[in-house]
Amino acid sequence: MSDAFAHSARYRQGIATRRAVLGEDHVERAQQTSTDFDRPFQDLITEAAWGHVWSRPGWTKRERSIVTIALLAALGQDEEVAMHVRATANTGATREDICETLLHVAIYAGVPAANHAIKVVKQVFGEMDASTASR
Image (cartoon, rainbow, N blue to C red; front, side, top):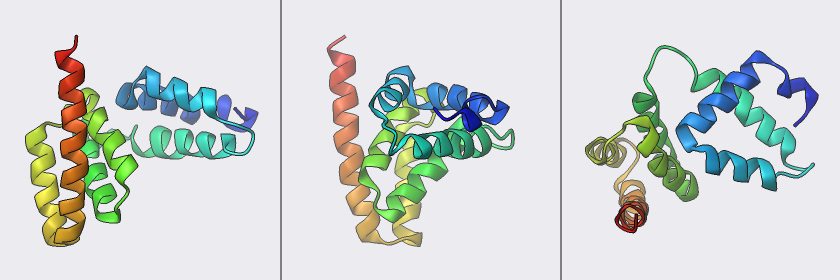
């Protein structure tokens, strides 16, 4: 971590929010696998995305989760959609919320984007269900 971000209050809030939403394991993996090359990027998203946007008081984590999934689906960002669908276990967004979200994506961003996101989400749900069943 760069000293410029590691000691700021925004960074500390960001890492706490990131852990709360994505889970300890995900954040630890991201930190353990970061290199000198991508560490500035990790610092940036921790401070800006997680410390500033996700930590604002205006919306709940559930609401932010729904909007984030919609935007990522509209942009065709499959890995990020999958990550944020897994995070719904921590944000409170339900499968019904995600279904409604993807209906909006279909109308406002296009049927192909929503159709592809639905395939990604169904796969993630299957993985989540299998993980829960094996416990």
